[in-house]
Length: 282
Ligand code: RRO
Image (tube, rainbow, N blue to C red; front, side):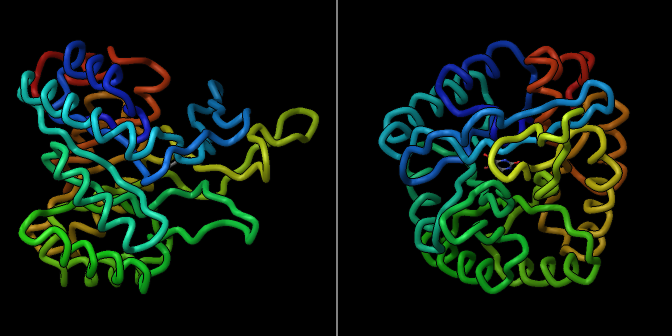
């Protein structure tokens, strides 16, 4: 499937359902209010080293748009027999719960809680990334569980360098039956690259999420470790540096049951899915 961030409108969904063999569509991340993107330049791809930096700033059209758009997206997806997954990002535990319920009420088949957006800055600096704030994660899961009842979520996490944190997060997620899947991983936060003059390629602080091929060994390591610590009923979606069938096989070997593709979809376009799957259904 595509990774969140690559599909935000009804037109984006239509391209994926009609022109790609993906197994599910991921829309979002969506927030309660519409958000404008961060100032340009906010995306940079190194052709030399095959990685990308982004500081998009969670741009999306907000609940006003998705109230009518999600039912259209759901109709399109069901016409093509594809589940609709809606990625949500709240600015408080209450907002995560509200958005998760909203997504289900408007046609989502599964909700993905985005705990890994690295690019939200306010007057007080960078907003906490939920993946690294376990008390906040716990409060979100508590409220989401309470709000959704029997319905499930997947949880998209940032990559962790501290193995003990992976274990702690896996233990925390295991305590919440609402968690059906872990998506690992989001971009590596706060990377930066300078041009020849020493100016960062990304505006603002210059700090941005790192993605692309360089993330594959890191993503695979996250999958292996989560596979070790998570109970069997929590599935793993692998993300990071996937652009070939071998990449997909490696993620499946590491313990993922599905994969998501972000940067190579942006760089290559919708043909990347056909190219990777080569006619087979992975
Ligand atoms: O929009 C973004 O800046 C963004 C998000 Br929400 C995310 O989850 N991961 C990322 O690299 N960028």
